[in-house]
Length: 140
Image (cartoon, rainbow, N blue to C red; front, top):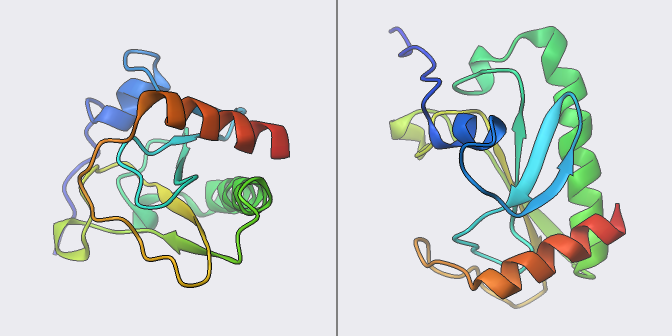
């Protein structure tokens, strides 16, 4: 079974190139982290690599380690920023695995005991997204 090729016109690639806006949390030469515009939890952040990779299995091994360090850094900041009891960290691969945007990314969701995730597909409030991005940036 072959995986389709990486499409440089995916929305995350466009965000990386500055062609689409985002609520930026963190950026360096390895990764970009920004708020999910359809958050399933308060403080829901996406962390994407700057290396073009469709999914986890497409990421060059030498780039995966540095990228995962950024995922960990952002996750720790999100947990601190929202005084979370825990984290849900999700990563999906291909349509059958639940992937919707075909650029490797991790979802970082701060969680509170007893608080369910919001349903998928609901746009977040712009002011709340910017405020939440500021909270995570401050925790970094």
